[in-house]
Image (cartoon, rainbow, N blue to C red; front, side, top):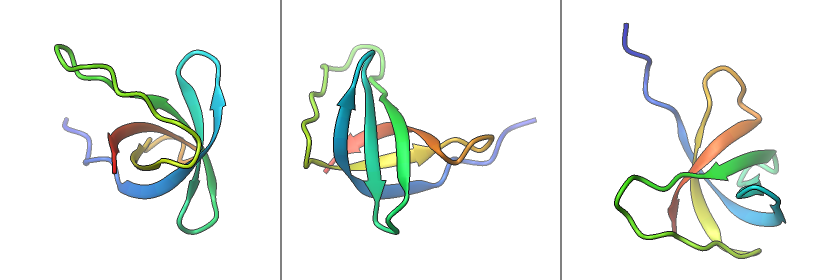
Length: 71
């Protein structure tokens, strides 16, 4: 069975954490812990505090996500 696509939301990076984790404040004032997703063969994308990013939320735990794009 295929899972439904993860909802994409936009937010601002508020804190950099170890192991390529970041804390993102979503537009609705919710905080999400997300990891940086880098597709195989793509260049590493560096994010800094204050950058706007697009996050794919996890279906099982909406307080976690994956940064899929830097805006």
